[in-house]
Image (cartoon, rainbow, N blue to C red; front, side, top):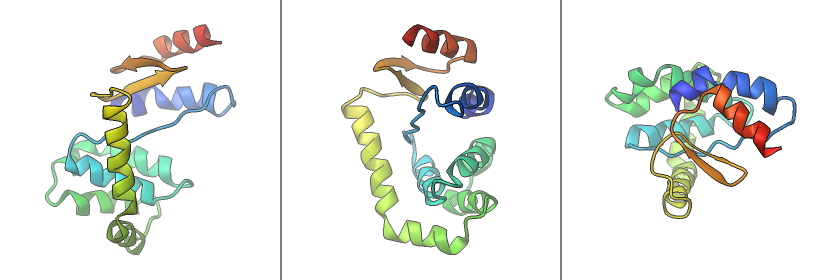
Length: 144
């Protein structure tokens, strides 16, 4: 996911998403507890700061994924995009986002058959694993 986000997503966003040619829906599929915490805190950033929080977390994946406690390391990164510590504490304390992330994970696993990241669904067709911009463009052009 981090590689896709760094190498493919910016061009995909510029060419297809920003132009209104496609809609991209990102769903969290955390494979460990640190990833659950990262998903919760990135969503805590709200829609206006979500992509910035996600980008910062993907860029620093090795840093926070190995940290103890991971929640504190993730919070420090998400704070760099303008989310306050108080906002993050409130999100964690409420528990609603954690529940949402875990329910989304279960739905993807049980109903959609997702078992790896990244997994893409393009017009209902499942594509598992990293995907290059060239291959993604090919799939999207065929879908038109």
